[in-house]
Image (cartoon, chains in turn blue, red):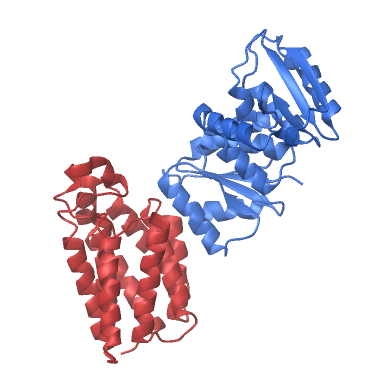
Length: 230
Length: 210
């Protein structure tokens, strides 16, 4: 039961390349390309989008697009299908949004959450704004002290780059726990990447919920193994 | 004279002819303020419509409009594909399964088409886009239909003339939507190619009824 993702791009190469990148981080997710025109030119094709949506299956699909008329073609496809339930357009940067969406889908997120993950991938400025809004009001765990905490030092050379962030966010989003890592949402790949945590940085993990202990030990095990990297 | 399936087929055939004839003109207009692909894209799109008409004859005007919508969305490639595709799709919905389109329904269909273009492209009148041809055409068709006459040809002519005047009136405008908007003030002094192709489509509707 995973949400599928459809990539609508003016260029077949962009669609295929973005999917290749995302598939490396979320190999279990069906990501379908609708790139270029029917006859292989630069542009977008309703036929290709409809075919991709048909293949996407019944667990819901999130559509990511590149430039203006790709958005219009994707909207037209949904209008043509009578705005099917469970198919959502994400207003997100294609590459960052796709990777974040794929990681969320891999973790078992529903279609709305996958769309949100894509749209949260807007860069550090937006992330910080969201962070301060959180601090003002709805704190994780409803303001209660965390059920479990842990501190882990990054030992791999590259630190918290895209692949570890994808792995960690994917794993945490499948647990029944709210997790923050140095204050950002542990289930958000882009949130984790904005930490800019290099080798030697300490990740402070706070977790709430039934799987709080599992979440902390999951992070601990990943970090201590260096994410399987040197 | 009635707006039935036969008229619709003739209309779309004349659209294809007009796009082929004006292909270079549309390319030139688009070269000045866009990416010079409008003439080629519209020609390709309507040639594909023509090919579809050769495969099977639509039974109602609505069916012809819907087939055109899907074909343009799939074959045009540029922004004009989803814009015109949505216009024809909404117009198809407005005319429904009727065997013939009444003058007042034709005015409704044009309004639905214009609303579809606005919903998809988010342009408003004065942005130097095809909306500047469609909006006066919708108003003129509505006014002609409301005069209570059964003068179908008069409604078609009113829409075409208003669209043509609307296209000419885009000359001094500064583009605020689409690729031409990147040029800012430099877009003034050129006619919008989308407004011109819109007027060609509405003029072909007259030719098919004549």
